[in-house]
Length: 259
Image 1 (cartoon, rainbow, N blue to C red):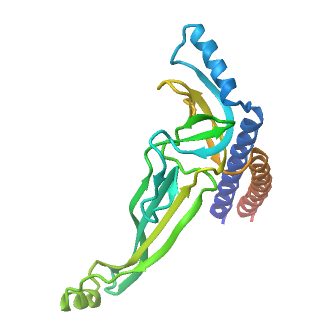
Image 2: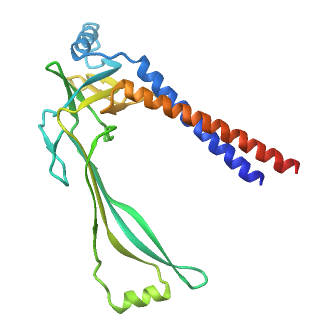
Image 3: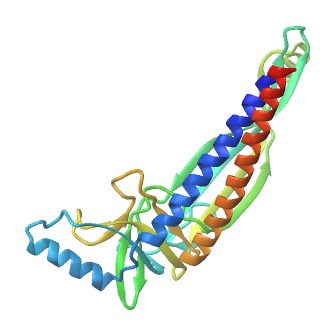
């Protein structure tokens, strides 16, 4: 019984750690300055004057409307929607036949990802006629639009009696049920909030994931206020649940050792 108590304590500790991470995210958003492109250009100019051309770095927030990169408007792979960013995933759903030690056949339904791709080019943020590049680093912005969510059944070519006999005797085999297609896009003009590190390593200003992995990188269609409110809610819920689980787990361990 004490093992169950230890497991409950570990789960509770996990929730508490998750609450700490949510709190750090809130603090990072509150601490970061919201800067416009002209303000960032001026800071970059000062950096250049000090002899640090190409080495400008500034962690901050930037808000604006999603805008195409110099490569132009993109089209999503599955639905052909005009966008500035897109991502899709194809998953195969299949039945797996497995023979148990007692000779019986066990059938389980499984899913595997067979294709997953995110658009390569970054996009930009547009505000007051000025743009700044966004390097999404292959990540999906929060709150993007899902434009495809469909399942297509398929039927694999049968090998005739070999398949039937294989299923009856319990030999390992897979049978494809179908494919799940999911796609997300970010359309031009969508309001965006980005918290990251602005740099000029490639010339133009770009906001990207911070060099310090401990610093958060946020791309969202929500406002800063909405994000901080949501993070605070998660932090409160997880901290309370985590603390309760830790207490319950300790009580279970103590009772198991005493009784």
